[in-house]
Amino acid sequence: MPKAAAERIATSLLLLALTVQIALSLRVEPGPFGGDAAYYVAKASYFVTHHRFPRATANDLAVENGRAWGQSDWRPQGYALFVALCSGGDFEPVTLRRRVAAVQSLLVALATLLVFLALRHETTRPSMRIITAIILGIAPWPFEFAGLAGPDSAVASFTVIALLLLGRYPRSIFFATLLFSITFTFRPEMIVLPPLIVACAALLQERRRVRFVLAGAAAFLLVLAAHYAYRIDFTGERMPPVFGGLHIPDRGAFAWVNTWIGSEHEAYDFVYALTNHQPTPPLPERAFAGEAERRAVAAAAAHVRATGRYSPEDDAAFDNLAGMRRREHPGIVLAARAWHAAHLWLNVDTSTQTLDVLTPLPRILRRAILGALLALKLAALIAFGLFLTRIRSFRDDAFLVLCAIYVVARTLLIGVVLGWFTHRYVVNAWIPLLACGAAVVSRLDRQRAPLSARSGSLRPTAS
Image (cartoon, rainbow, N blue to C red; front, side, top):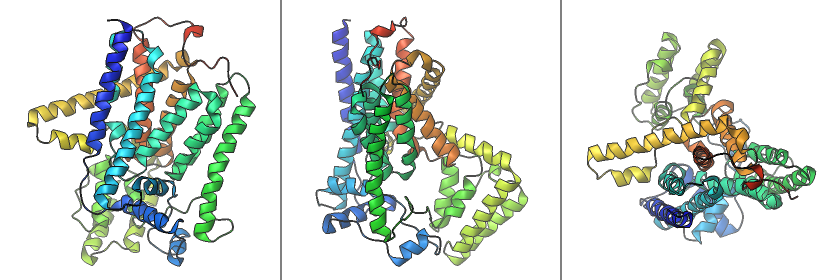
């Protein structure tokens, strides 16, 4: 098949698949917003009405400073502003859900398409180009949360576009870093990643590194200053912390489940059931370090059932168990952190919209499709691992190298440093991972091209 024809077919297939992904994301449910979405929508509605965000109440400040128990207002406001822009002033739940889902899914589709185009010169066989388009198009994980009013999909899109600009268009360093830095106003832990990735991008430059770093630092500091101005206005303090303290009513319970090896659903479903006064699911044997800990957990759960509420005393009991586990079984806690990093990827979760579409199908067909998606996920992870072993052969393509660094850094940050294993927190690393996997598979079928013939080289390098 001629290469031009294969490119047209591949692009058409990808656009078709992305259109289906967008349509699936738009299948929203009626009803009021709950959970994190309710917070963002309330902030967005206030901003549209008053053209500013609300200031902290006395209780907000007391909780943030640890003087009171409850939910602190620790989130930055970038995503609330994003929701306000999407709303057009209409906060009726179904309408707003559709608008947010449309914008977020379009952004994810755009990021996926840009990656596909960026990989054009990595593939010489026309059939491989078509396969790459199919894989990028049908992979459900980048779109998993596009239909929800939450920041993860927007962060994913901004991150991919920023990585592409940093790697392939270094002259755009200021705008690329500005876009990348905006992500920490959506998710606070993102604040450590733009400086790291920009520093790595600077190391890949052959000249004008100082100008590159200065431009990136200026963009980062600009976003940081805007966020800090919000924090000063919100708290009324002269020099508040950059972010509020992460105080949540069930912090101790989460601290305990994060110290043992289990699945995301085993751990977090237990916490949500416990704190929402629902029957708690049975915990596996590996959740307990011994009989004493088992009895303590059972007593705490029984106390919650008896009182009908999850109290500060209950949370303190779980926090004490977490502290005891860290002191007496540090090896288990370290192993749990390593497991968390792996479990962010090694899980059977797929997008809710995909599951909804598959529900009417016969059981055997539904299981076959889900099995195929699981096989695709494992293949993508293996391909990414292969990319890491061959990353030196991609050193001329800063975009792919930065993608790999980002995936590893994000995984270590969430799983090892923070000790979380909610797979939603790595949805913004899925497209970079797929890009690396597709690139290494594409190169398996051809001889390595001369350096001067490759796309993505940073020679000559712009400021």
